[in-house]
Length: 203
Image (cartoon, rainbow, N blue to C red; front, side, top):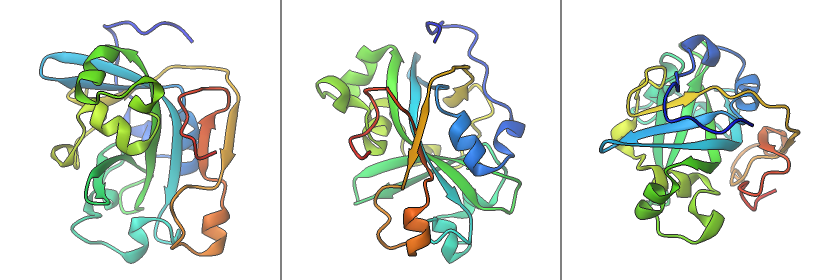
């Protein structure tokens, strides 16, 4: 992969997200998650994702229908769906597919590329524990409920910029969905860059 420039990081278009969720989850791998916070630009390579495929996916929040919590999932693709788990960890998802089809991709792990020191100021962890999990990366990048519904197709605050690669991709079951139906628990809808050390330990 090419080194990350500090300039010229255009966001992915809405059409990128207005596609099949599994395809988006695959294609986000290798892209740069960009965060602009307090005048500092930070970026990290997306190395692990999970796909959540709408009302028929019992692991997906939209399986229970439209609620105030899930409203963003039912809206336009390319918006952030941010929610709290265990009362302490914010998780970042990006809405996919046409409006009204409540699907999203969870960003599970990232590899710091630009201004890693700024991330470590926010999350003072040693080594890859900085961002090798979904709650870890949001702490490192300062992502919380204030970004719920944020339009990630604009180069403001938080967005994803494309980076092409030819690295092998692995897949397997998603993590932490014991409540889901067996066929959804076993679906290989978690994707990661196969040889990247920043992928979470749940392989």
